Length: 167
Image 1 (spheres, rainbow, N blue to C red):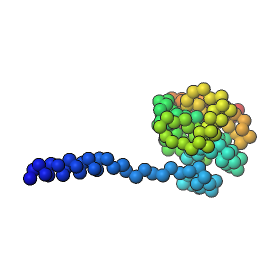
Image 2: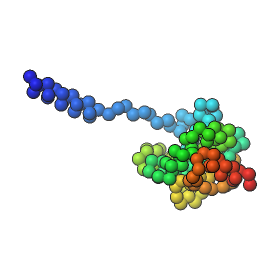
Image 3: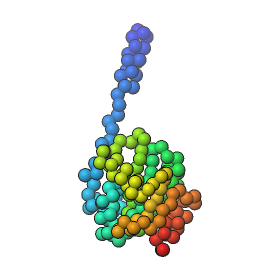
């Protein structure tokens, strides 16, 4: 009898262990609208469409912070995200002052062919050679400044960004 219970237990573990949880469906770029980006729930979050970022920049009279990143493999990118971009102080600042654009070059995250094409074109256009590269851009596509990881947390990073905006 113990033998039968053992076999049932082993088979149960094998069957349950082989099932995969249902993956979350990624949001397609087409599902993101200007209205949803401008809503309070989405303000201060990263968008991935360059043309939408330019449009928002013109409408809201805010510069674009472009984050060229390797989000799932680049150590300095992860450090910048963890120490600055995910902190409430930076989130609040960005909601009021920036359009956030993420141009990602991941190794494991799936992207559409159109997004990959856009990201490669922007990497060439802005001559990005390493990650993270942060480019501040005005609504007329004039580069206001360029930086990368900076130590000191959100306050220091905001002050660093402000130095580009005051020129």
